Image 1: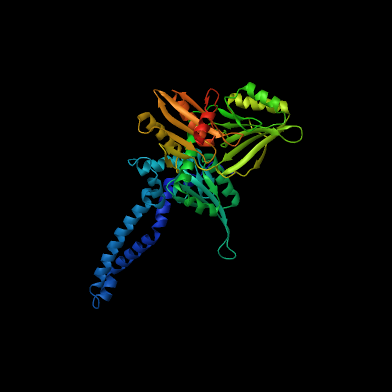
Image 2: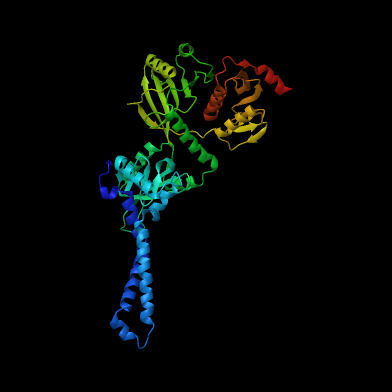
Length: 464
C-alpha cells in the first residue's frame, strides 16, 4: 500500500523542478561548456604562439566563442535552477488561480501539500490538491483518468505501466509507474478525489479527446452537483414508484404500506429527485425493493463512481425490507451498504437528451444552466414559456405567469398508451426549479397530488 512520503529530497516540488530544469537544458549546458573550453584554450599563450603566424585571428575568434559560452552557461544555469522556467514550472504557472500569484508561492503550496497529504507511487506523487510528476496538475481540474500496461517495443524489454491524466483544458500528464499494483492503487486514490472523472484504458483516452461539448458539460455538471451536495449535505426527496411502476403523487408512509399490502409480491422503487452522494463517493441512482423468487425480498441500491456502475444488494424478510424501505423514504438517505453483495451492472443507454423549447424555438444541446436562464427570461418578460421534452416520455413546461404565480404543466405516459396531463400554479420559484431539476436529472415527473387534472381537455384539443 502507498505510504505517506517522508523523503525530503523527493517531496520537494521546487527541488524536483530545479533538477528537471537542469536535465532539460543539459544539451545547451554541454554546448556552452564546450564553447567555454575552446575559448579558454584559444587564450593559452602556447596556442597563440603556435597558430598566430598562420591564423592570426583564430585565437581572437576562439576567445569570443569562450565569452559567449560563458555567458550562455551562466544564463542557462540560471534558467535551469529557476523552478518557474522548467517544464514542471510551466505546468504549475499555467494553473495559477491568479495571475499575480508568484511561482515561488505556488511551489511552496505544492511542497506543503505533498508534505502533509502526499502519497508516493513510484516517481508519481499525489497530494490533496496536486499531482506531481515531470509536470504538475491540480486534482480539481482532472476530468479523465486512464491506465494501461504497455508491452515492450523490443524483445527482452520491460513492460511499462502508464497513467494518463487529462484536465479540463485537454492538458495531459503522463506518468510511468513501476508495477500494475502501483498503477491500480494510484487510480483508486485519484478516483476517491475525483469520482466523476471519465475513466478507462488507452483506447478510452482517444475517446475522451473526441467528446463533444455536451459530454464535457455532463462531466462538469456531475462535479458541480457533487460540490453542491457536499456544501449543504442533508436528506433528499424521493420519487416513489409502486408495483405498477407508475410514480405515485406525494407518497406518504401510509401510501407505501398500503401498496405493499395490496401487492405482496410486487416491487417498489425510490429515485432521488436531486443528486444523492454516499460518503464512499458513489452516486446513488435509485433504491429498489423486489421479490427474490425464494420467498424473501431483495433490497438493491444502484450506484455509480465515475463511469463504473455497480449494484449492492441484500436479501431479507419481507417485514425487514418494508421497514428499511420506509426508513429510507422517511429520512431521505440510503441504507448502510456495509457487507452487502456487490456486482457490476450495465448502465442502459441514456434517454434522449432533453430538448429545451423556449417560445417554441428548439435547443437540443442544453444544460440545466440553460433551463435556469429560460426561467430568468420568463421572470424578466423576455420570453413567455419554455418546455423540457426527453424524447417521447412526455414533458414538463412553464406556461408563463399569472401575476406572481408560475403556471406549470406536465405530461407523462398513461396506461392506455396516450398521455395524462396535469397543471398547477405556484408562487414559489424554488419549487419550480426543484421540479425542473428532477426532470432534467431523471426525466422524473413531479408528484401531481394537488395538481389539476386537465387530461380530457388536452386530449380534446389535440384531436381538434
